[in-house]
Image 1 (cartoon, rainbow, N blue to C red):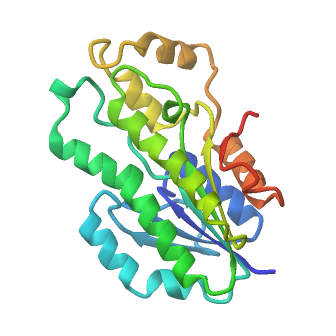
Image 2 (cartoon, rainbow, N blue to C red):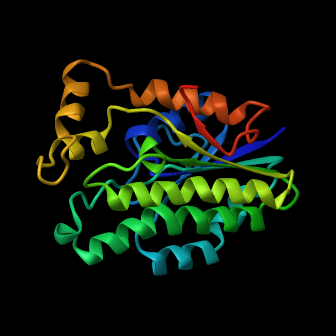
Length: 238
């Protein structure tokens, strides 16, 4: 059985951890992000796309790269990992253009890619994984945009499940708190922007953050399991 995977935001952090675990399984990967990866080129194809730019993403989707990559696959995996926590803070500190970029990156791009992959995958089984967050299930002060966009991914996965296509499985997964650049951005906020700042600083100082590599391996194991899609909204920790 031939499995191929598309991973967004693949060049660093959790995305790089997911790609490493997929490549270790011998699965070919199409990485889509603004930067390139340090992963070995065998089995890895990279596409430089700014996923926060809807016009450019639409043009890329209409091109041949995605369709050509999935040809011959029995199973196609889509991991919508790319995302941003910015803008952080209450409404009076949110630049409207930053809100638009965040919603495009966190919501429009995953939903558009999900539709595109399903439409080009032929008869292959399609597994779609949205990297969500506990912030999609609970509101946090200063994170109105992040919470709203992650909640959108949760509802999307639930609605896709209700469509009833057994060849399309979609899960919105909260992966836990991971030691990535996003965590660094969070710790770089002020308490006025993010009143829960002290909690996230403590997680780093206490060594409570998960590694991107270990979490990536756990996510790939979950993605490849036969039961993937049995629950549309899931937390990898149970």
